Amino acid sequence: MTLTNTLLPPRDKLKLLFAHGAYDMKPIFDAKDEGIETMQVSTYDDLRQRLPEADVLIVSGLWKNDLLDHAPRLKYLQSVSSGTNQYDTEAFKKRGILLASGQGVNMNAVSEHAIGLILSLTRRLALARDNQHRHHWRPEQRDPAEREGELPGKTMLLVGLGRIGDRIARLAKAFGMHVIGVRRNPQAGAGSADEVHAFTEIKSLIPRADIVVLSCPLTDETRNIIDREALALFARTAFLVNVARGGCVEEDALIEALEAGRIAGAGLDVTQVEPLPAESRLWSLPNVIITPHAAGETTRYEMNVLDILSGNLAKLWNGDAHIVNRIA
Image (tube, rainbow, N blue to C red):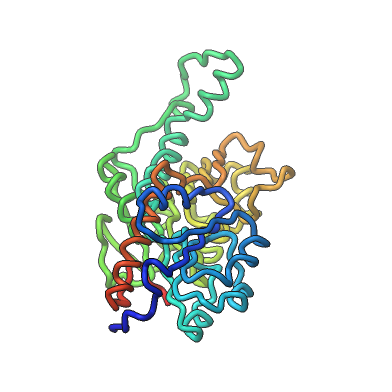
C-alpha cells in the first residue's frame, strides 16, 4: 500500500505530542534536532487538552479511546508499549489514523528479566537476600530438597513465541534447558524452541515442565490460560514465571496452589490488579518473587521507541504506509 506524501504535514509544520506518566521523551527527541515542533504531557487531562493540536501522538498508559473525539488532526499514533489492548483498532481504521506498537523495544529487557526470575527461584537468591537483611548465615543443607537447583537438563514450557519468547528460548537453551514452545499458530515454526505446539495442547504439556514461562499477549485465548485445572497439572517441584499479563493467570487459584505447596514457587512481574493491593496474600508468600511490572524497563527504552518513531516518520513522508509494527 502506497500513500500520497500528504498524509503527514511537512517537517516544519508537523506537531508531535509525547504523553507518558514517567518517560521524559521530548528532550531526547529534541536533541536529535530534526526541526519538528514537540509537546509533552504526563496526565490524561493534559493529554486531552493538547491532543487537538497534534498530528502524531506517542503514548501508552494514558490512552483512552474516547480521546479519538478530541484528535481532529491526528494521523499517526505510536504506542510506547508492546501491548495494544487499550486501542480500539477498528475505530482507528475508520478514522484513517495509523497505529503502530512498540513491539520489540523491550525484547532484551523482558527476556533477561524472565531469566532473572528463574535464577532467583532456582538459586534461591531472594531467600539469600532475606537472610542478609536478617544477618543470618544459612548453614549447609543436609536435605537435598532444600538446596539450590541448577538449570541444565530441565524443561521449560514457554507460552508465547514472539520476539520476547524466542529470545527467552535462546537464553534458556544457553543454560542447557529443553524448551517446549506454545504459540497460537504452530505452523509459524518453533523458532529457537526445541519443539512447538498449539495453545490448545498446553494442559497436556504442563506435566513435562520444570518451569512454565508466560510471555504471550493477553487475548481471549490466553486469558486465564493458567487456571485451576492447569495448576493441578504442575509438578510439585515446578515454578511459574509470568512476564506476560496478570490476566493470563487465575490468581486466586495460583495463591491456593502456592500456599498448599502444590507448586514450588512463582516469579511474577504482573498481577491481575496493579499495583498489587496491600492486602494480597501474594506479598507474604515465601515461595513468590514479585517485581512491579518492571520487566520491560530499560535505560534504553525511550531511545528504542524514538528509533521506531523516526523511522516511521521517514516512511510516511516518503508515502510508504508499511511502517514498523503497524497494527491499524
